[in-house]
Image (spheres, rainbow, N blue to C red):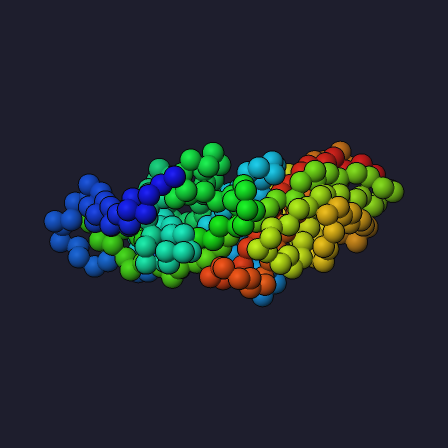
Length: 278
């Protein structure tokens, strides 16, 4: 059990570390980078919020979150620092969880960047424990923020705080063939006591092409513990190829405000693969 006193000095320690980090701050450049911006949701996007969401995992005991932001326009930005804060302490008490260097951790010159926080699944580090509480089942909400640094050590303003919490994963997700063009995806789900599930989002995409190659998708409103959705691939956005491996991604999404949490947005994401045969 971590003490309250230890929690209190974490933000101050992070601030002290971020102030220097070994960069040359004596150079003539004293113009800080612009404030990092989260990737915005487009009108036709299938995610409720693109800046931060559940990262699909293959095991129901994993809880990973994906952060996406636009690359800064300044060519001398050298790194981004990711800050995180439990919702009970608020976004002003953020601590550093990642220092991502351009050219090492991130490719230079990208219009968008992404980082996946895998958290700490052992239960031994409450500062970065993303999974719901193993005894109460309550989900844990966090705020995430981003700082940009340039090669002279100048620091940007902190980004807007983005809130998210991970909920229980669907489990026993599998895909089976039903008829010639129809496949079924099955899963089980045990909800969190502090979450009102809104819907599931199902996507199918090529394993080689990744999530940008979605060929079939459907929003499904379901509330039972065991579910089946039939996927008619004769209605797909692009034809599936026989013998090819496809990914079926299942997102559980909540957009309903619940007691005890600072914001409503919460979710989980699982995936499984199958070989299409027709």
